[in-house]
Length: 149
Ligand SMILES: CC(C)(COP(=O)(O)OP(=O)(O)OC[C@H]1O[C@@H](n2cnc3c(N)ncnc32)[C@H](O)[C@@H]1OP(=O)(O)O)[C@@H](O)C(=O)NCCC(=O)NCCS
Image (cartoon, rainbow, N blue to C red; front, top):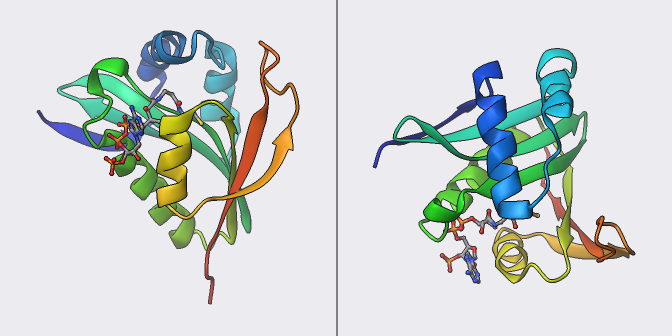
């Protein structure tokens, strides 16, 4: 299995939207991702390519000392093989290179695989966003702090 992590290209967007629909049943949508790619200098989309196809992605906005994770998934058929850790490692290295002091994210309070993963990488619970998701469920806001010299 050959894989790489690379920046988003316009030709990836349809596959990413389809992948989001598969894992979340919902998507940020083509237009938002397209606008981020073309117009948002703070947006970073890390695409996981496996054997020539899009197998997931992680996006974040880095605005000075603060960064926010926007979305993150690995396609179902590739989950549990370590690709999530590879994407997250890459994102954390990018944050360190950019001298980010804190990275925040929202995660569904019921999403145990993701919560375990974030805990392993030093994310700490900050607060709850009530009824954050369209189906009315809550989000946990997690934050990872970086040592910046
Ligand atoms: C969360 C997600 C990105 C992890 O990607 P992945 O490639 O499956 O993860 P990895 O194989 O790298 O595993 C990383 C860690 O996640 C946790 N994990 C993964 N699958 C798990 C499962 N089914 N149950 C419990 N923990 C799990 C484990 O802590 C694991 O570490 P370990 O291998 O040392 O035990 C992936 O499961 C996914 O896309 N889920 C649906 C979308 C989602 O929830 N995105 C995050 C939104 S905030």
